[in-house]
Each structure stands twice: as structure tokens, then as C-alpha cells.
Amino acid sequence: MDIREQEARNNQNFSQEYTSDFIREIISRDVQEGKNDGRVVTRFPPEPNGYLHIGHAKSIVLNFGVAEDFGGRCHLRFDDTNPEKEEVEYIESIKEDVRWLGYDWGEHLYYASDYFDRLYEFAEELIIKGKAYVDNLSQEQIREYRGTLTEPGRESPFRNRTVEENLELFRKMRAGEFDEGECVLRAKIDMSSPNLNMRDPTIYRIKKVPHHRTGDKWCIYPMYDFTHCLSDSLEGITHSLCTLEFEDHRPLYDWFLDQLDVPCHPQQIEFARLELTHTVLSKRKLMELVRGGYVTGWNDPRMPTLSGMRRRGFTPEAIRDFCKRIGVAKSKSIVDIALLEYCLREDLNRRAPRSMVVLEPLKVVIENYPEDKEEEVESENNPEDPSMGTRKLPFSKVIYIEKDDFRENPPPKYYRLAPGREVRLKHAYYIKCTDVIKDEKGEVIELRCTYDPETRGGWSADGRKVKGTSHWVSARHAVDVEVRLYDHLFTRADPDDIEDGEDFKANINPKSLKILKGCKAEPALENARSGEIFQFLRQGYFCVDSEDSKEGAPVFNRTVSLKDTWAKIERSKKKAR
Image (cartoon, rainbow, N blue to C red):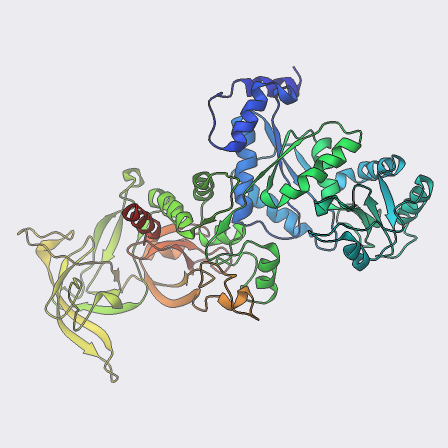
């Protein structure tokens, strides 16, 4: 049984009732009708001119997910037709990101440059059929002749060259006998078409730039619209899933395949791209942020790139869950970033061990605790998963608590520590504030407290209860760590909501990063490894930074806070209904 027969058989086993989105409905119908012999072959075709972002993740999850659902396969293909902007660095990062998301293309890794010889032959075939010509108009003139949405275009004065003349000129283009911009090869379609993409689009242009895979073999390179559909056909793609901006390009996609002797004619289907609040997903704008020094690089934890999100502590499971929750639709919509954060919390809540870290330390001396005494209190590693066990936390006379956990003059409904007030130390004891020490500026620098030895474990034997609970760290055993608090990179939900004369960068959040040094952590965190994620009690989820951490000196990035904004949004919607 060959691979196509095996794929067809696998597809027949797919549930005929699977109709989770309109794309799967179309493919399910194709499978039932025996189209493409029941095969389903998709592809994820990034251009290697930047790093992948969360918008690409939606396409990856869709293309690989559809192939998996129907027992087919998904190719990874680099559309590398513009050597000026492409780098091997981007190719390797894209491979890493796709693997990290949990997908494997197996042996099906391709490059558009694999097909350069065949694409050139297709171009000559169009010329021979009278469907393409070499044009000597400049780029400015081509744009002028193209017309507008309300006015038809004009034919180039070079449009009616003979087949022989066009072949000769095109071969001279390939041989490097013309300078860049001196001429191009254009398809001969219809300059009066209401679809501007059909008004004699450029197929090949001259670029005397070496290619990262083909070297100096070529000085002419095919355009994306010409390359994409033919690469799909040469690979036997059955369903070419594209974002909505390619809808107007579909007639051109089909035209090329109809004019040429190709192995198959894939079906292009468009879906709405991801738009996310407080985020830009334009590769050009992300490049501006990197090159302008507004972020530290493509993997800055504030960036929506997959490498940046991975460094910040996002998990592939959370991203896949998010992509499945938002679904696939034809209509454009903007997704609140709170949903992405909700998916992340849901995942990390189950997997992240709990830890005690005091971000802004306030010293507490427990006066009636013996000076030379040390003990260990027991704490669960994750109450959501008892199988993760427990750990021992050292406790001693001097501890640190958060500055915000004390108020000298507490407001109403403030239940944490204050003069004369009692609180519970998580897993340890009840303590009561007896004195406040201040510096010369009047700032509180130390608290004096007493503890109740009958409340070990954080519970009172006499049944008395306190409303406030504080996390803490033993001063004698604490390790100093650096913590980075990240917020949205843009202050506005729509970063492009700007005043005249400004650009999206005017909405960059100046408080998107706050660095805290000298934070006090429980001793086990001194040996935390790169990429490990923890829930700091009451503070959020934090990941050990993969770039700046050193052995024995971890740097923690806040992945996401504990505050569930999405749940609040959903409650508001229900009330409104």
C-alpha cells in the first residue's frame, strides 16, 4: 500500500460528524466525496524574514491540527524568495518554535528555493503560451499604469512583444545581462479587471543578491503569488489554508494553476487572522521595535513572538488551548489578551510548584522566638496536584514579609498586619505586631512581633481565626534574587489608536518592565534551572529567565499575575445580557 492509499484509508476513519469550524466542514465534505482520493495535505509556509509570533501559532495549530484530525500530513515550507530580507537565523528559530508548540513535520521539510528550476520552467511555459511578457516600465510606471479601484489600468507599451522576443529577454534576465529594476516578467491577464491583483502582476524581478541556499546561481527571483500556488501544487497540497488578506489573491492563485501543466490544483481557503489587544502582530512593526531598541530583541519577554513568550514562561499547552478556544472564522474580530492569560493561568495552576518569595522585603523580628532556634514547617508543592508532594521550609526568629502586608494606619477592610493586630504566617504561626521601627525619614524599616507557639502550622488550637495571611521567608535562609515584572507592551488596547503625526510607538507602555533586585526567596530557589516555572504565593507565576540567569543566581520573569481579568470580563458580559 503506497502512502496516498494509506492516507486515504486513515481519512475514511475520521468522524463524519466532526464540524468544529467551517474549514473542517469543507474538508470533511471533500473526504466524504472522495476528492483528492480522500487525502488531506496541508502546509505551514512562513517567510524566513522574522520570528514567529502568536498570530503564526494560530495558523500552525490549524494546519497541523487539521492534518492530524483527518489522518493526513502537514508540510513545513519556507517561502524563501526574497534573499535581501531572509536569514538562516530566522529559519532555525521557526523550526524551534514549531517543534516547541508540539508539532513535527517529519520528512516533509521544504523550501520554495527547492523549486527555483521548476518555477523558471513554468515561467517560460507562460511566455510560450502568450501568457507572460518582459516589461521595461519602471516600478513607478507599473504602479501608475495599474490604475485604481475605480479606474481600469492601462496596458504597457511592451505588452505585445512576440513570444520569441520575450523568451530572449527573459533568458537575458536570468543570465544577468540587465540591471536591477531595468525590467520584470509580468503575467498577461486583464488590465481592466476589477481585482487589482489580476492586472498583469509581476512574476519575476531582478535581484543581484546571493541566496542563503542557492548562492549566486540566480539573479532573478519569483514573486510570492507565483511561487506559492506552484509550490503547493508540486508538493501535492490539497487544502491551502491562508489568512483573509489573501482572499483577493485567490483568483490569481487559481489562474496560474489553470494556465500551467501542474500536478494538482490545491484549494485555497481563507480564515481571519488573529488580532490581539495591547499587541501588534505586524512583522514590520515588530522589526521596528527591535531595531529601534524599544525592546531587547526578538525574544524580549514583552514581545508576542513565540521565542519571547517561551522566555517569559508561556507553555505550548496554553497557547494551543488558546488557539482552539478562539476558533476559526471568516469574519475579523479582536481577541482580548485576557483570554490568552486565562489559558496560561489554567495550565500553570495545574503544573507550577508553589514557592515563597518576598518582592519588597520588610524585616520582622519575632521577639519571643528563641534566638538560636530553627525549625522546618511543611508546605504542599501544589494543592491542585497532591502527587507533587510537600517540601520543608526553614523558620527562624527573623523573617521577611511584603511591605504591602503592613499598614501603620490600616484602611477599612484591611486584614493584614498592623500595630496590635494578628495575622497568620502561611504554614507557620500567628504573629502580632507590638512595635514599629522607623528610619530618620519616618519610613518603616522593621517590625517587632510576638508569635503564638500554639498555632504551629498556621492554625489555632483554641479555634480563634484571623482573616489575614501573609507569605514570608526566613531571613537567615533567604537567597537574594532578581525579579522582573512585565506588563502589556502597549497602554491602549488598540496600539494603532494614535493622534495625527504619531505612530503606534507613541502607545508603548513606559511601565511595561519593572526590575526588582534584592528580593528574598526561599532557599530551594537558589538552584532553580532555566525555564522552570513557579507560582510565587500571592504574586503570580514566574519563570527562570533563559538569557540572564546564572548558576546560583536565577533571574525570574513574571509570566502572568494571579488576577483573572478574563473571568471579570465574562461576568460583566453575563450581567449585560
